[in-house]
Length: 169
Image: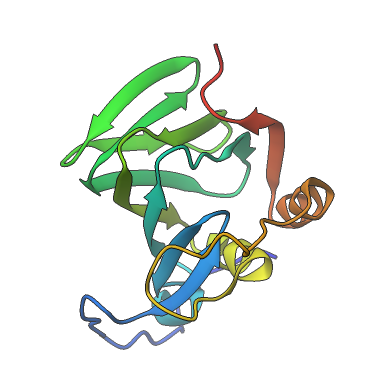
């Protein structure tokens, strides 16, 4: 699924507060979709993440969007294009499309913004997540999707899974 922006798309200004946005449990963390294709005419998606220590994305590459990660609390380790970066609160990490990357939470918890341009990545998240019953980390009985389901959903959104979660050694 690809998001496009049309010159005749009318986009309305909007604002969300700290506890607003679509709250979902996704891959062991809480994500809040702050903006996506509907709100921005396909231009950008902004997704806030709250994740526990050890939560990590699979090593992957995006073919459709660039990603920015802005750490607001805690710390993460990123592996982007073969380079490891330690990112504490206030850090920004950019992962351009077609460049393999992954990340892992290294503090007890971390909060960070993921910005994807163009929008559309939020559809991938929604397809694998479940609505959060509370704006908290998911309970232990919330099971992440089967790797085959994750891989199929990723392929649908132009994402290639290249390896397991965590920072390559």
